[in-house]
Image (tube, rainbow, N blue to C red; front, side):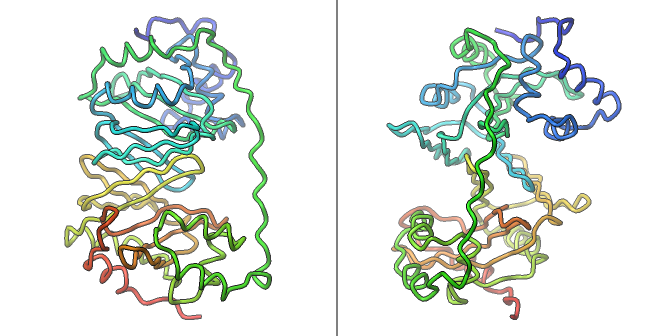
Length: 356
């Protein structure tokens, strides 16, 4: 099944406006076009229906495991200030019985999927300066991109065609039934948080995956908890130290874990870094199988965070934007049941904390 046989003669006004904008600014990405045209990215992609885009059924329990058949792909997950791209095979996929959570835990593609927020999905075959680009693109109910899967030169095109035939929506409607973004709940004033109880609860953590539940029990936000829990568990760092710790890890070929996510998906790379480059205010990892694009000017706070676990202390660096949203996290490479790498702990602890 191919999507390149359709005519753009009856294209929607939105698609036409997009193409006109691209004539003036040919390097604009879809996310930036959507912002300029005051629509969501999902609405923009839906305007391609009947031209080079197919809407698929959002049957995540069946669709996600089927992605393994595509072979080698590039998975992309991003937030406002950081893009995480990882090549590999989309395998070892599980979706919980409730359909609300999913996991991909292969050695290369490593994802945490919060599927209750996944809403629509499209297959796109777009002509670019580098040739035909094939991708699956998932959006939430606000029309914001959640996760994308791009085919590579190693992908199976017969499997791609079969996947489109199997999951195509019978009715190719551009209507998305978008909803406003949920209102972010205001944090309690710091004075109302029992910091001693928070620190006590924190000290009893046995698994880093229980961290969010601990925050909820104490009715405290993530960044607020870092401020209040005390320097035994969290310390602020100078934001400019973040590229430095990645550069030092690359110099020693220390394997680290790089987490980047949004409200509905977290993507993880594990391994050493190699090719690090600055482009303007973007700090980039440009390795063969892993790319990271981090807008350093958006990093407003950087914290060193220590969490106890049954495997010993787990140390991370966590970067936040001016709105308190998490941008990127760094850990030493490890698996459950393994202690933290001593070399990572030494590196993570080497940077002095900011003074009050």
